Amino acid sequence: MIFSTTMLSSRGSLFGSLMGKVRPLAAAGISNSPVTQSKTLEEQVGLPPRPKKPLTPYFRFMRDQRPKLIAANPKLSTIDAVRQLSKSWSEADVKLKERLQTEYKKDQQIYLEQRTKYDATLTDEQRAEIKQLKQDIVEAKERRQLRKRVKELGRPKKPASAFLRFIASERTNTPQGAQQTYRDWHQKTTAKWTRISDSEKEVYMQESRKELEMYRKAISVWEEKMIRLGHIDVVRHGNLIDPPEPKPRKTQAAKEK
Image (tube, rainbow, N blue to C red; front, side, top):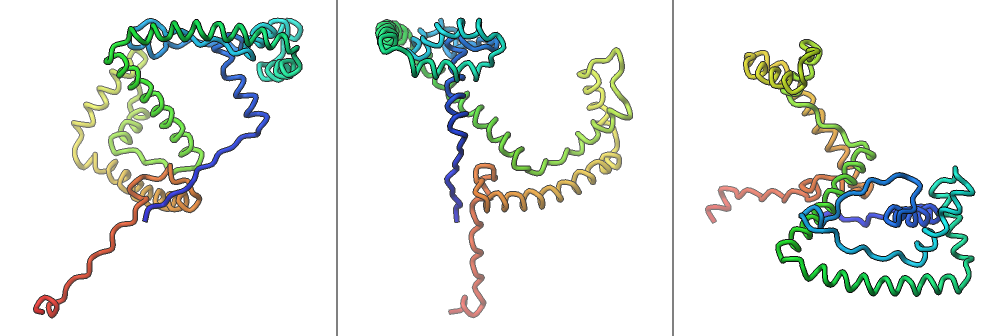
């Protein structure tokens, strides 16, 4: 039996709407917060940055009006600024919106021509590399989100191994020296672990095995709870499928028949 569910998420409509408008502000250069420009995918593979899409009429309006608004209200937060500018945009003169739309269409045509020429210079290998980078970014984001969800849902923490327990005890018993780097201390401690007797290691291994058994019971209970609540994405894949029913053994009489 395979469990399935529909994952639903929602935010307040007003807050979600505002945040949706705040996020692109950095690209438009109109955010109150300092922004560190990261390399584009093309730059990461050694190519010049691709042409930028032109600002829509709404963001052109924000770009033009924000300096005046901030000058009059220096302490205004980004979200409050967006709220006021959004209201001003909804009340803006029709002719102003038409002018901004005309400018946008003109710049959009220029952008499309530049993008076509840019894309024509890319080799198949470069396209594949960019595509892979995009996929890596998506997967990394999904992993971060999953780790965050797992933490928020209170997943039991896996106990430390015998070696890590030894390292932790050595931090107290034989701490890092003032003139010693952590790397040197760690290498020295690791070498010490390889030299201690099996009986000394067994002390740490027994503690690890004991807590590991407790962890396995706790994670089993937690995953069953997550399945009941519909949080299938945080459960280990193998636990979503019921094991097959054991085949009945044939009796000796049945074999003789």
